[in-house]
Image (cartoon, one colour):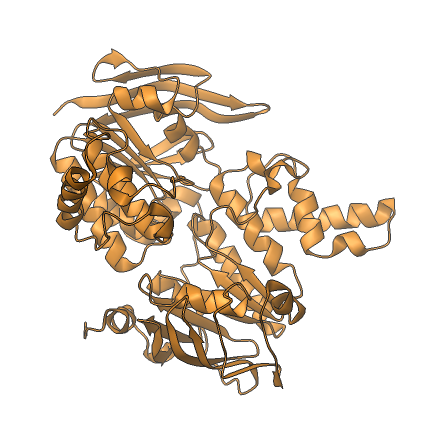
Length: 495
């Protein structure tokens, strides 16, 4: 099959920043091309232009040999280009069936007909979601998989996927890859962005690396190791990490006994987290991991604790204010963690989170505070030319770094981090891991909620696995493997 997409010398300027500096890319029908690069390299900008969400400053794009200049996503879809953006939104009132077919010729069909068609598509990838369910009642990963099924229904020729699997567990990644391969087998061209290099090695026919707004190299990912690909991306050795040292903590900072919740279907959940420990919490969707976090931060009004102790003292949590007063911080897995802060400056957000605003006023103190912010921006490799610039001008991954940095710089005694490194490049992850370890050395306890088993094993001293609202296993790091963790999550022996 010939090239479906051809991009020539594509440029994009954002005020004083050149996001794209002459990108050249060709993608053939039936081909899956991985798009790799650091946060801020221009990956999402490129896909936004191809998807009709943004316009280029210069260069040309041809689709199936014809000039392609979409002014909006609707025009792109008419031309046969569909996209799932990194921070996609859904209409929470639509049913799953309506969401799948919303942009197709079947959109106005009777409900029963839509449901039947949707069920057929969902069954093909083994996605156990009720086609009559409201999109707003689904968890984020389920919404993302429904969006992928929409690509199948829309019969698009070019499919753009930007960090679709950022919070997926291994089984969900398998489902995503299956439907992606199916789309390619039907002759569609696919551009796939992810920071999980193993995904690209497994899925992509080839990959290109975007660096400083231009494609620096093309690779055959299946013929290279993760370490080799990482070196190509960052031009330096990346610490891949290992396992944390054995943890001999006996000073419980948090004790949870018999936590129940009708809202989250939690059933007598019990665990403890020691001072200076990173405690992993994992499981499949609707296993209860997010509901445990909701109870601990006071947003689940139905949650009840048999016993809840912080620093040895029995406490109660019935509101977010109670949780904050106890020194419990929470980074959610919501893509809009920073809320309406997009118009605020990066420096102001980080200064306030670190309590720098409370320092005595004066020029020297302000300079000192800004220096600390600049050091943190550099350490986390946040790509910006101006720390006083607006948060909303950063890439999605860099915005996530700022959201995480807000909590790392606080004085919280217990940090609950829900998929904290989603959308963050591997080079920056290694710096974040070091910062988390530094926090634990100061006595901070961390509950790390995640679905990336290799990341959990590389960071956590103990890992609890939940299934059907219960803690079914707590594994010491030295005996935990990806297979034993996933086996417990599924309720099957994978060893």
